[in-house]
Amino acid sequence: MKTTNYKNKLIIAFGFIILIGNACNDLDLAPLSSASTENWYSSGEEFDMSMNYFYGIGYWDQQFNLEAIDLWTDDLIYRDRVGALDGGSLDASTSFVKTLWGRNYQQIQNANRVIQELQNAEGISDDKKEQLKAEAMFHRAARYSNLIFHWGDVPFYTNVLTVDEAFSLSRKDKEEILQEIYKDFDFASQNLPLTYSGFQRATKGAALAMKSRIALYMGDYEVARDAAKACIDLGIYELHPKYEDVFAKKTGLSKEIIFAIPRSKEYGVVLGGHGAQLCTRTPGGFVVRGPSWQLLASYLCTDGLPIDESPLFDPQNPFENRDPRCNKTIIEFGSQFAGVVYEPHPDSLVVFNSNTGSYVTNKDSRGNDRFASFNGLAVRKWINGEESDWLNSLAEPLSIVVRYADVLLYYAESKIELNEIDQSVLDAINHVRARAYEVDISSSAYPKVTVTDQNELRRQLRVERRMEFGFEGLRRYCDLVRWRLAEKVMNMWTYGILSSADDLRNKVVEPGLWFWPDTPPIDEDGIAHFEETNMFQEGRIRRLAKRSWPDRQYLWPIPTSEIQINKNLVQNPQY
Image (cartoon, helix red, strand yellow):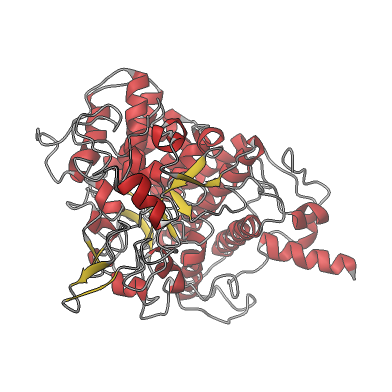
């Protein structure tokens, strides 16, 4: 009986199912089917329906998962709490570790099944077979990319496994798997179409972009450079004119979006109550999670300098003279959110509500509500213009897996690391920055990147990525891991305003020091250090939570259930 239970666990973890029934069907937009594997795959239509399972939102959601939305980074805080990863307590029984491991292998098994069945499929043209095979290989490569980044060496297979075969699997060197990933993405890029009409699936550009991503993440810069350049040279992608509109549901699939997974109110695929956790309190949200002070401090001033070097920065008015992405990502004080003025000042006890044309109690001020934002900050990105849906649990944002701004910065970073710095590198970064200012790259109305020193340009690139990709899923987390910065920034405290409204008034407001009493220093990695400021030493700000990052977390643990049932699986060190 014990052996049977173990086999059942292995079946779940390695995905010995062909059509996903229970893993994510509450999140899927694709039509489901209850057909058995014995009579399935008998027509092109049935293959197409099977492919839909690869696009379940649960396999791709990187933005808004409660456990993942930048809470593994220094960009977001969850009041004064930490979780398993940012608290340094990640282990082999952590729920999301087991979930993500299992979902990756479910999709790999599904991809292998499709590829196998295509070999003997009848009534399907050879061209159609090649396209379906390429699509399955794209998804298999994406799943293995996820696995080797998080776990390192992992079990690798390209056939449909039996249970007994699975018991003999051992870990394969991640570098060898990486070469197989490249082969899958290459086949996909050669055999997938440039675009689709209707439901958007994996394309030639998506395969090239995803190949560039995993190559960059694994430090294979020549491959990353060439794949990014090939994607750019397709000539079908461009940056959307307005930064904030890239993330608006009304915009849909702009030419910037290379690969994304949709949500839809019509099909009941929405964020649910998760969305309201990001919204401000006065209109009806909870602002449980919000931008960190470290993120606010990271945005350059409009002269292109960090806040501790720019004469334009005023710590009492931290949104003024900042890169435009700052107040497109974080709600600026005194601006409207859901028709209500957002103002965390302890003396702003009422604010104007343009929906009712009257003043209302300001629940975002600690003068009224002790659960107001613990650091005074709240998220605008993704939510702006669609606040009612977020507040009413009906938000349906795209899960943007990769966009053109990603690819431009992949290209730039890979060339910087290869020390192949030329005008194309500067242009790639400046295209992204100029779009933020809504000007042409040739304009003088934004701070161009002009340096050519490798170390300085690397620093500029990393700051640019942080400003561009805030709250876009695992981008910041993956950056911290691959740049080996996690051990630095994830062992720091998070900071916020004083919890008592009276203390805020006495120590900060009355001396004329609201919002920040002084400017935090920014180090060579673009990281703010609040511990070193007078405002901390004088007790004008407070610590919220201590993050912790043991070095073992650069690799995740293999789930306990897998180790227990397969003697050939060796656990990662220190777990």
